[in-house]
Image (cartoon, rainbow, N blue to C red):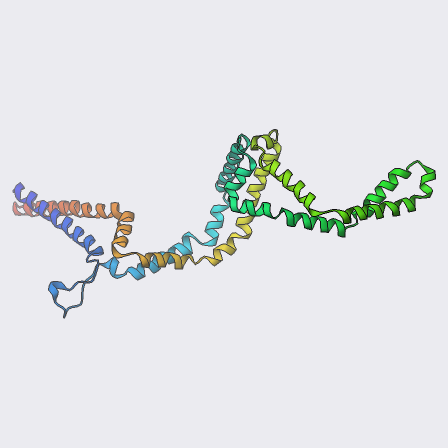
Length: 303
């Protein structure tokens, strides 16, 4: 048997298999842009399979993502899964624990969340809030309520005063009404501003000291709010998001080099295995065919 011939044929077939697969994979992406063979304009230009079908690829990926990967049912199921709600609960718990031990004043924390300009805007609403409070007090029956309570207290167990209870009630009602009408918004605004400033300058660890039960309720409230939002509002938001359009537009905006890189990043390992598979299949096929041929030449019958 001529083993050198067998080995030569096996290596040759392996190289052919390796080269064929490598060229075929290369032609999936190249030429990136249409080119005429040998510059012959009479012949139609050639282009790699993937760049030539970029629009179809974008459409297929966008449909797969919007229909199967990021549809409402999938997102809702994932966002409301036990693992996700536990992560939300843990995240809220860690956040609240940081606040419980924080020496930062409440105002600084609110500024970080709401931004300073929004905080200033809220503080600027205090005068208007004071006016509304004063207006609500004047339009309410608070004078009558105060007069009733005071009259009941004064005449209780005092039979002589009880004879004049109606007169006392009327007098107190008129007096309290006049006091309310004489009230000004400025002192109320100053009082609210002073209390607000004091509260905003209070460190969080002081506000939250011995408030473990409150923090636990706050944690549960945050998780329930998250769940309620996903169940009730997320579908409305997702309905306004054109996932198909977003994905397709993004792929359409990518140049062909980016498309090639994206595709190879996903399936590069598989492509390399195909190339080496061509080599090994070629080696095996060439070896077996040459071996059978050599055996037949020396008169050995397999079947």
